[in-house]
Amino acid sequence: MRSTPKPILCAAALLAVTATFAPSAWASSAMDKQIDEKFAAADVNRDGKLTLEEAKAGMPRVAKNFDKIDADKKGYVTADQIKAMADKM
Image 1 (tube, rainbow, N blue to C red):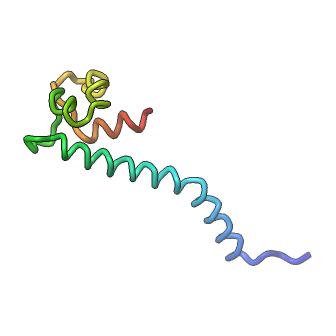
Image 2: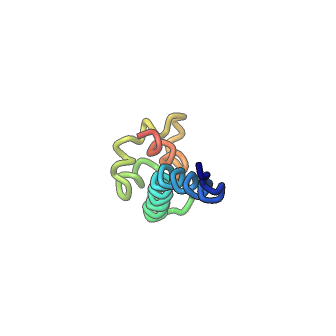
Image 3: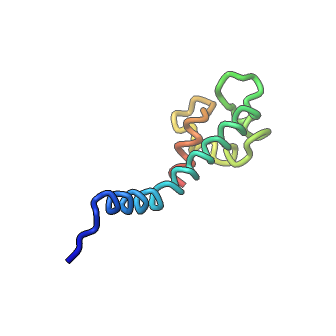
């Protein structure tokens, strides 16, 4: 019986893992970039926070879920909070 060289087995295993996990990582990265871009455009006063009014004007889906995202009831949401909520969905 002839055995397959170990480098070929390692490469095959790496390809299998990459094919399994990479698309979701790329999708997450693309989603994060999109959130960052929309957030920056909606954050008119550039304070790193979106109020409900800013969200209504620039990120309507965030506005619809504002109370869920602003779990601490601070009156604003951050890009990281929006990304965390998007990851849950």
